[in-house]
Image 1 (cartoon, one colour):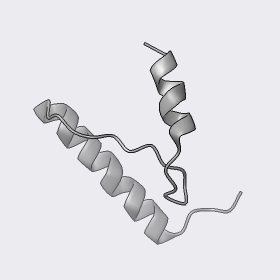
Image 2 (cartoon, one colour):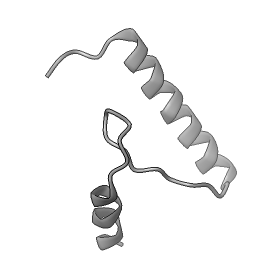
Image 3 (cartoon, one colour):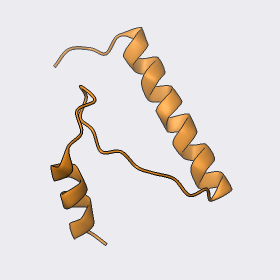
Image 4 (tube, helix red, strand yellow):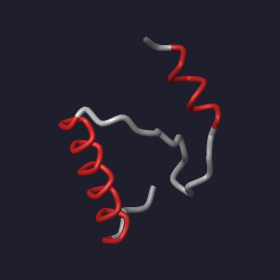
Length: 52
């Protein structure tokens, strides 16, 4: 597994910051389940639905 570069780290930081803001404000939103290549993955959505 390759070490993430600065762009990937910055993107991850922004995603986490936005998630914290949404949680803090109790905002409604849409969750997109995608892999590291930004390819939509219905398998991830199906897996999350199994857990409650």
